[in-house]
Length: 542
Image 1 (cartoon, rainbow, N blue to C red):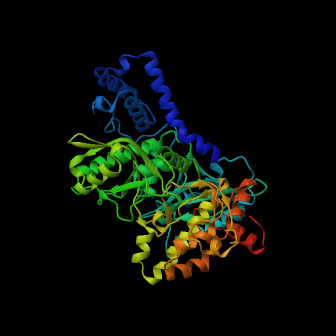
Image 2: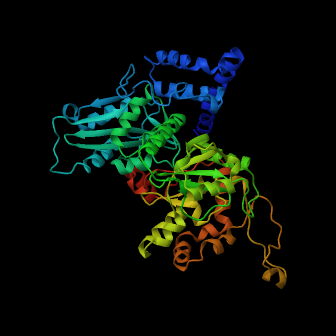
Image 3: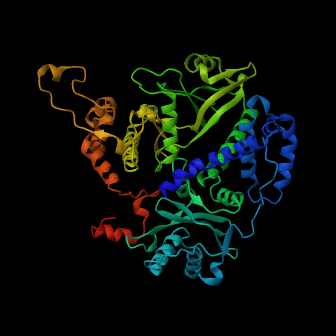
């Protein structure tokens, strides 16, 4: 699954490049003749009438056209700035979701039908046991005196959602005025037998499952728009751009993000400003206060101690796309030649861009074109959050910070710069890492203890007196940079003191090198069905 996830990231760009190469090889002059492109677009629209994925086809057309034509030579009539084909009620040969009637078949038999319809080939470990657990969990969401109404239905998307070690059944229960979205993860035992692990019910649980900080799902969709419409029923707070990203259609998500940004600019008046927080040594970050994203531009020159370059920084962002983000690393949209109205930039921000990243900016008087940047969900920087936090809010945030580092470690990621400012707090209080210029694969790092000093001069020296390799890491040295605040220090040492010990990091490195793939669940372990809790009570390793 991890290999497939990495391969999929590059698949779209490869197909675009194939199309561009073919056009330029077969029509070297005509392809660059801008007068032909309005007619090409009209002909292309005619091909979309019966297409089951017209929005994705439009995005693919845009990618090819923009690669063939220079930015100065394409206009709105050349590409799809707005969708040409409506997808609101688009359906394929088979329905995108199935409807089940518990009033006719009974709840348990209905659930058995739903599970049977997924058509997985492996045997079930104990399906009657899992169905009993599922019935109990569902009834908890419809406590007495709730009654089944005549329109009671369970609607389930036709395809499973695959990610990591799990396959998820996604659906909703409709009972009169009440709708409850749900997901049921299917896992495999050590013997390869299948079991239902838990019930995730309610919008809050599904928002965590579909978080922008998690890896994309694999979903077999004849009509993606139909799946997105269903997901918008169950997750109305989730932007369409993030839903398309979550099902693996990243370029379509990026297209929708840009259209949403342009629409927001049309309906707002505030100016782009430097994002709040401590200015980084590698990135200049700006934001539109009324829009929930930040834009990151790589500076032309980095701060002291940053021994890297632009190409390396970009490779780190690509690396994040290729790994399992385990709910702890924010997803990004990468943009080349992002054009924005000049009048929406504050004078202070324009001066900063021209001073710190002049090669990344093109100013024609009417627009500012950012030659390369990343767009990312805006979060409250953890250092700012802790400064403002009440005493009761400090401990949960510090615990979350340590848990984020642990989750990254088991995903084979060493964050490099672990300062509080490089982590953000989401709306639901989750801590997420977002500064990628120093990340490394954990297995590429050499975790060492600080050698004992041989002389008093070495012990008192303010300089490093021992040899340090390029991938050497000394966890004991993290404390002075992280634990200056006494209240933070107390909580950190209580819950996460082992993060300052090389043994913690070396242990995870050795397990990963041995081929162990950790379980990372997008839900709390206490939600898992009794099967797992009984195993844990007996001390059986998972």
